[in-house]
Length: 84
Image (tube, rainbow, N blue to C red; front, side, top):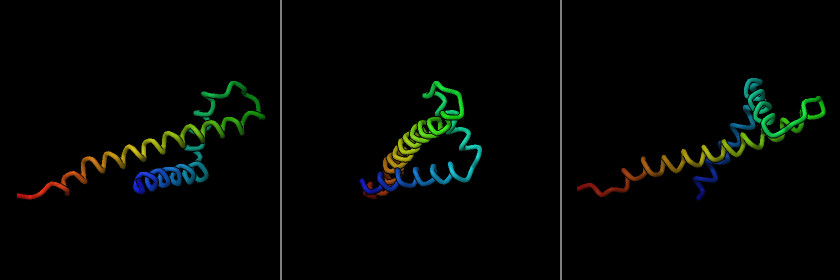
C-alpha cells in the first residue's frame, strides 16, 4: 500500500512540476480542460486550467499506480520464487 501511495505522490509531483515549468505540458492541460468546458472567453481560462489539471492528475495517478503494480507483478515475482 505504501508503494502505491508513493507512486501516486511521485506522479502528482512530476505532473505539478511539468505544469509549472514546461509550457508545452501546460498547453496540453488547457486543451484537456477544453474538453469539459464550453465557454471560450478570457474568464474561462481558470476553468480550463482547473479541469485540465484535475483530469491529467487523475490520469497521472492511475498510470503511476498501474506501473507500480506491473513492477510488483513482473519484477517481484521472480525474486520470491524458491531456487531449486
